[in-house]
Image 1 (cartoon, rainbow, N blue to C red):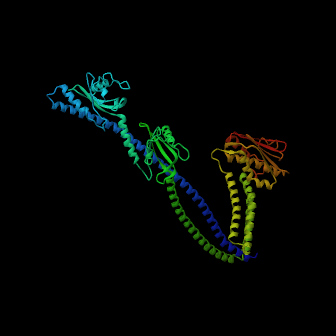
Image 2: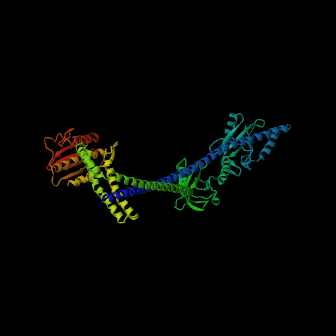
Image 3: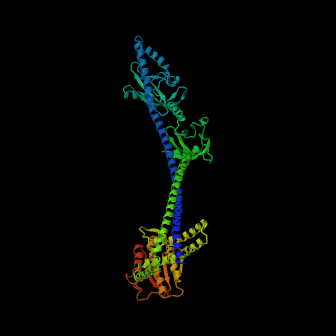
Length: 630
């Protein structure tokens, strides 16, 4: 090929290679960007789903707790209200008695008592369940009572089902509290004369008649009234788009559900979802096991869509009434929110891709323009230096030769020199392959073979070679990484790694490598351990090469907790075998060894790794034994 053709080829390369480089870089950027965006989108969607579910769950929990607190406050207010109401009723009766006495000054005491008994005994309140009673303070004989068996009866010995003497306790309350007070006991209801119910009662002493009058409210009546009021409120209580509450008793009876009104009062313990889970029993069990409430996952019909959907609910026991209150979220609603977020995210990504392609297109155009400009400038330079180019090349060759001679005399770091040699062996073949591929590119261009398919194949083939060379560099770089912390690693894998980076050197010098034995793991500094292996194996290799051993062989045997490294180089002379671990002691030429390799190896094994390193000769050569602390 003449000089003119070389110049033309260089000018074409100046134009084509930058364009190819930009295209390759663009493909790599787009590929990396796509992978990153897909992973980022997946991560964002997962985080969004978790956040939405957690927020909805927390909202459900807060709603139930708020409802429970509201019910508890209602119960407290009801107790206060009951006491106030029955006191007001007794005060009204007392006022009536005072009015009767005032309006009948000519009547006898017995006549006044008869009038008062007739008036108060006829009064009813609280939907007919409220009434008055009175008994004589001294005789304890009831003056009037709606239950006939307790009217005009001596109650001095009456005891409720707890064994409390009723009249005795009432008198104590009056005497202690200045003539009036509250008392709780068990007593019969009108209509249920043979069964006693808990009752909160207010009593007051009427001095003019020597009577104790009173009225009360049965606890279960007020509780049922409040429960019905609360359940009616729950029936219509809503939040969000489809949030509602339901209530079961701890026996499984449905007390309230806005969408199951026909089933109110039905026992739901046998109710199952589509998976066969007895969900109401599960609600009750979870609520009882967890005093602070619990989340339950199951399947239920969504009243909004009328479809069976997966649902997460929060359930909590209201211990005062033996209720289990629940509310929940349908996961399909969250999926819809996630879907909307995905569409929004995709739109942003599309815009980002458009921007990226615009940047790449502008970069490609600028690269083409710059390449054309550079090609023209190169042609001018060729014309200027064409006449004396050969002279310049000859001078440059001489200068490089002198530099090479100078470099040959420079000192090398022992381990790094070995590694650089290994890199050279590892890279020689791929570099040759790259050179051949590039040399053939001109002929392919002249033959008209270069098209899109050819370029793709050419790029793919050469990128694989470059990736191999890059991975080789990574392997050598990682080898010299400094371990800051101990970690567990495989002894056998560490040995394989050291052998792998030296494989080209072994092959070049026809040295056979043998690795046998069962693997084991240790917790130590892997990089330092590999450095020890490299030092010992390099010494064995150097001895084999120096003595030109035929059928050269290095054998590595793993016998937990030992690693034995042998060679067949004839062994170490007896007069120096005891000194090889001393600092700066070496049998190599000054430029080939520092005498620090084995010394540092012993220090690493025995001080850093708490093991032992020693050497001995066998019939074929040297045998280094590393004992590790497992």
